[in-house]
Image 1 (cartoon, one colour):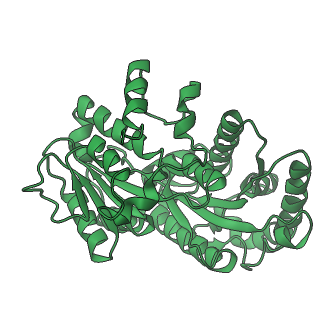
Image 2 (tube, rainbow, N blue to C red; image 1 turned 45 degrees about the vertical axis):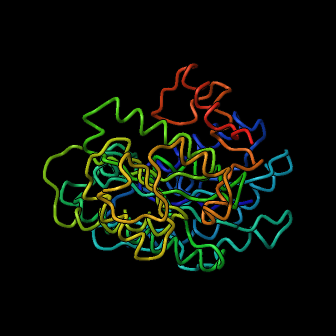
Image 3 (cartoon, rainbow, N blue to C red; image 1 turned 135 degrees about the horizontal axis):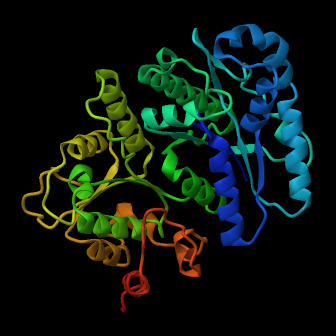
Length: 384
């Protein structure tokens, strides 16, 4: 399987390196990778790059380099496949930024058709696009070798929001060409590595979008730990999209607020199941809106909340008082929970199931041996 990985500007190559290292460490098999963005960065940096000169450089540098990217990518992947790689990931920027415009890196959507035309055939089978908090994007760009000379006015948050919007739009367009039966998967940057690997090893892996009382949990470490453990259990069943924790920078612009709402609604629309995790009876206006949107568009919704009689989130498809009750239901009569039948853990390898090898699979979740033993027991099929 070949996945095209694109998304938020700034250091996508780091994501690719982390992805390759984690995949090969966990599954003990080589992963073929190619970074178009890294190659492009090397070329433009050798030509006295300046964002204001980009429109003038396009004909002499960028256009000439574009023609070499697909062939170089195909050749590199073929060599890596000959050395034993089964899957491959191609990282590429889909858009370029200047002070006057945001341009498509590749004007022709068929640019990567060459991967399927020459043996060994490695056609793109999924498009994954990662996005991030725009202020974190600015921070990464300000330290990059290519973008470090942007002026402050060029680094407006609104401009980055527009850049990410164009990148997502382009990713969706490419998905229509390469994978007409599967739309692009838009993921938070911090989930890009795990989501991509899960698609490689289990292409039919279900996608969860999880919501919880983020503001309250950030102030309550014990509650956050409980939420993280419940999310960890979901990782046995599929790819999990968790909220992007925004940088604490004080008041945000109206453009950021609107973008954040649209972004999270997009995660809801990407998911097979929208999952609310509320171990305590605390409100969350943001997730309430997302949950209502999910129900409106017909998504399967699952709510973990201690009070079934007066949940603040309306009527979900299924309501459980705890994650343990939800997991037990997965193994119960299928006619009682028909929309959940596809979630029963399968034989396909998952990152979560390899957590016991001692690898830091779930970033941000510190799990003790005792907790792992309890978790493993809770995931066992109930007797009878």
